[in-house]
Length: 269
Image 1: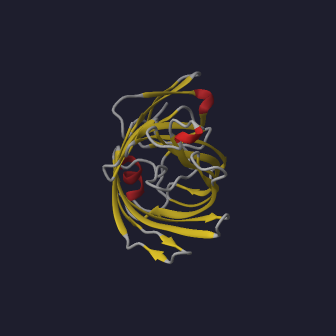
Image 2: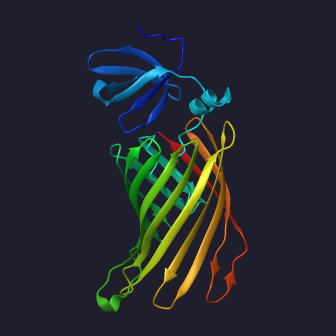
Image 3: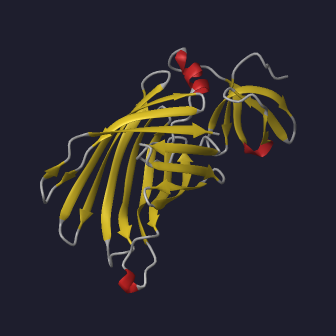
């Protein structure tokens, strides 16, 4: 018999962790009510890796935090290979970028949105090697339909970056390493190599802190740029607000941009 008066921890085959109450278990399905949802969800029995009574490991606030804030896997500028913990999300950054992203399954996610005079497109694939080691690849681009080199017969320009990701840790704390390149379809042989290094973790019941440094190198003119950022995120239930600063340093021209603020909001489903 299942004790419906306690909090259960459910771990799926892809190592996604959920907190809630196990209502009923049949040979084919597990019926589970998550803390952040009123309705009961059904999970196929073959997808269940572990089900047990949840016992906080660190402090009494851990359980409350896990049931009150979305999983730490969707960042504002940083991208990780952490497991998808929601089916969909809508996000706004500085009232300039609006996008909706959907997890097609445990390993693939796609998104579409609006950017200034352009269309935002995102794709991400990821897999967990162990509960603490995750790998993936991310592509994020903006299509500008009204720009481009018309002399080449172009009807628009696509700019973005493709990045391979290695993420160590989980939503309590992580280290993310990325390597890829920036592309621009309007410029021939325009490939600028990118390196990412990000780290973050939970510091209280509702707050996460994380930072990233992204470096770019254009080998054609040996120009290097650095893009550091720092973010504090407040998450509760299915909402997350972000407050951060970022800056740019360009080596060749010795350009340093003063720290600029940004804000973001995400709604999860």
